[in-house]
Amino acid sequence: EVQLLESGGDLVQPGGSLRLSCAASGFRFDNYAMVWVRQAPGKGLEWVGTIIGSGAAAYYAGSVKGRFGISRDNSKSTMYLQLSDLSAEDTAVYYCAMSPTLFAGLFHWGQGTLVAVS
Amino acid sequence: QSALTQPPSASGTPGQRVTISCSVSSSNIGNNPVFWYQQLPGAAPRLLIYNSIERPSGVPDRFSGSKSGTSASLAISGLQSEDEADYYCAAWDDTLYTWLFAGGTKLTVL
Image (cartoon, rainbow over all chains, first blue to last red; front, side, top):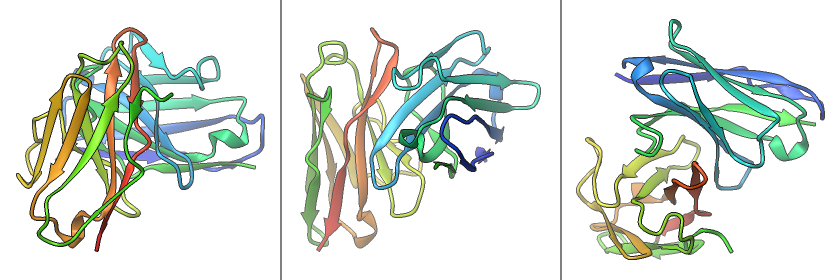
C-alpha cells in the first residue's frame, strides 16, 4: 500500500525558514516523480513544484521560485521542501504526492502538514 | 484570466447525474489531457480521472471524464450524499513545465 507522510509543518515568523519532509513507502520511490501541492485556508489547490525520480531536476511554480527548494534522498525514500523568506501568503497545508512521470497525474497524496506564517 | 476555469458551485439530488465543466483557455495546455481530483471535507485530494477519461483503480464507474477540444467535463451519475466534495480539474503545461489547477467546484448534494 502506498503511503505518504508529511511532517515538519509549524508556526513560523515572516521571513523565516522551514523544512518539510515527505516519507514514502509501498512503492519503488526512485521510479516516481514527487510533487508538492499547497492549499491556503479556504482556497483551492496550488502546485508548488515537482522533482523527478533521480532528483537531477526540479521544477517550481513562479510564486515560490527562488525561495523554495525541493530535494530527495532516494536511499531514505524521502522528499524535502525547504521553504525560505516566508510570508503570510505561504500559509497553507502542504501536501506531497507521487506521479509516474512529470505529467502523468498525482496518483497518491499524503494527508498534509500545516505551515502557518505569522 | 485563469488557464483553467470551472464553475464555483454545482448541485444535484441523490440519484441524479451532474456534470462539472472545465474550460481550457491556454494554448500551452489545450491539447493536453485533463485530470480530475476529488477533495472530501477535511481530507486530502485524491485522483479521480487521469488522461481525461481514465479512472484509477478503486474509483467507482459512476465517475467519468470527457474532453473535446478545449473543454473537459466530469460526470457523476447516480449521485450519492458522499459525493459532496470539492472537485478540481488540472492540466500539465509542457511549455512552462508547471501543473495548473482550476479554482475548484463545490458540489452540494441536496
